[in-house]
Length: 324
Image 1 (cartoon, rainbow, N blue to C red):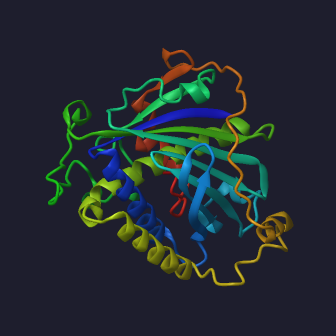
Image 2: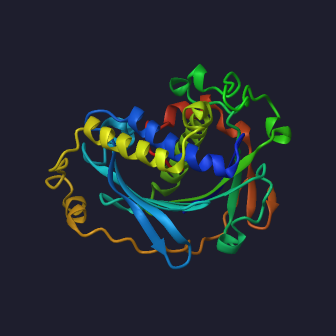
């Protein structure tokens, strides 16, 4: 098990980001989906939790097919999907990823949003105070992304919003920009397979970091498209876009069948959908790490270790996986 805490600052308020996040996830998923590959929305409905209150539950299937790296394609079926379940009690969300073909693989994400520049070192301490983790800051303006994902129109160093006047973010913008908010994400990756665990868990965290960087850059670069929307309007945009995305990837009833390849995945798809409250993190062993500690149970993640050149070779091209 490998745990990291990501902090992504945005030149927005928490209230503004609530709209921008929903818009960005829908548009990003639609853009990244294609025939047979992409994000199918299975369920999207209000949900009430006795502890967190009213929220929104979504279940999605992420069809990967040829998006896997060569070493992974050698051990998985040609057609399979990852299941995403998300409980959104904004400004707190829980997201889980599982794959019935790989029962020992999972990603668990807890997210909290606050109007600050990533300075709250105890935001997760009540849930994970005893867990060893790295703290990784992601800079949407200055961190490099894989070259194939780069678009000048989505580069915060060049983009300037007409509606808000914000933009053309420069080095050090997080120290002086107003407004500013931070998305805090506690991400646990687990792949309990002897001989592959370390390699897969580290690889998945590299993918997660890329997706978080790209998605948050897009959320800001598209601000003029969603800034004047109400919650009702963005929910209608979400509904229409999800319907168009399902049609785009060709997932019509009956859905893509993988029963002959992966019976467990097929059977699990037929069971009634259950939405129990996600479990808390299991206990984690203390790990050694070369990064200096910033406090009990925390280590700092150097931005220099995540340059695009070092990540390009092992980057997974996931089609529209939100993680937000």
